[in-house]
Image (cartoon, rainbow, N blue to C red; front, side, top):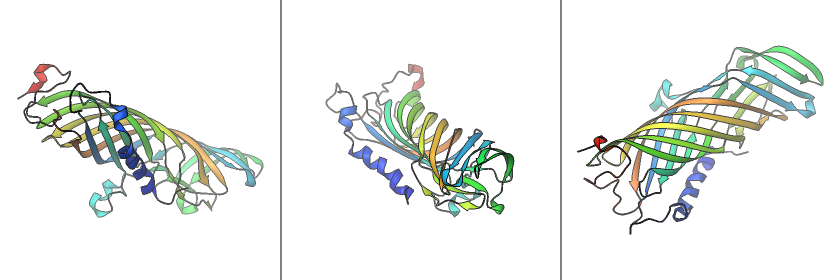
Amino acid sequence: MLSNIKFIVILPILLLFLADTEAIAKPSKHKNRTGSIYFSWGYNKEWYTNSTVSIKQSSLGNDYQFVHVSAHDHPGWDEGLFSKALSIPQYNYRLGYYFNDKQDMAIEINFDHTKYLIADGQTVHMVGTQNDSHVDQPVLFSEAKGFYYYLNNGANFLLFNFVKKYQIYRAQSNNFKLDLTGKAGIGPVIPHVQNSLFGQLNDQDFQFGGWNMGLETAIRATFMRFGYLEFAQKVDYARYSNLAIYDGTAKQNFGTYELILSAGFILPTTKHNPMFERGHAATSDAPPALIKD
């Protein structure tokens, strides 16, 4: 288990800077290889598929499931974004590097701080074994009665993505660009597990808790060459295992649909990058009609 998620989300950033990007980029035809690095920060909204939560507490004689439970997110930013720390609401960041000459392919670290709460006041079907006896009964999730299950400080999806960019529009001055981006990746989930089942509290903490894979599409508008706004939609599938509960573990899997709004910046990592030079003619696959003065 981990006591601080900041260590987990910062470590991949350090690894990206330490990585030998020269080995990833294919040889350039030019004296100066083109490259650029970008970073964005934003906020997100999630919807989750129903899920079955499997509970195993061998020492207590428990091996049961909560079947077909529904859950919701907790955006936080809708309750006053600037009234709390920026990392408390559901946030996200992307850190990436465009490595090819055309600057339309990248590798990316993609992190979403998402919150997953089994809905309070929900009656679910419990089936399996409890105290070494068969059970098949309804159970009420009620925090007031000490019965809840949250990934409330994050279901936390971390992905290592491959990114492909498609140009929609580009001014010849490079002061405005509009691009469509597709992303695909896989990585670990780093949930913060907080629950109380039948009044028995877990030791809540962050942990590596399984894996996820995701697909994302985004529209990016870049202004004055270096700043951009991005609106994205994403689907993610996550499988959680060995999640900490009282004297046992839980597992589940669910799908997520996200909407994400981010602001970021992009900077060249080499001299004479045509993506950033004023008045440089666009070099992309976009039809000429879409490249304007």
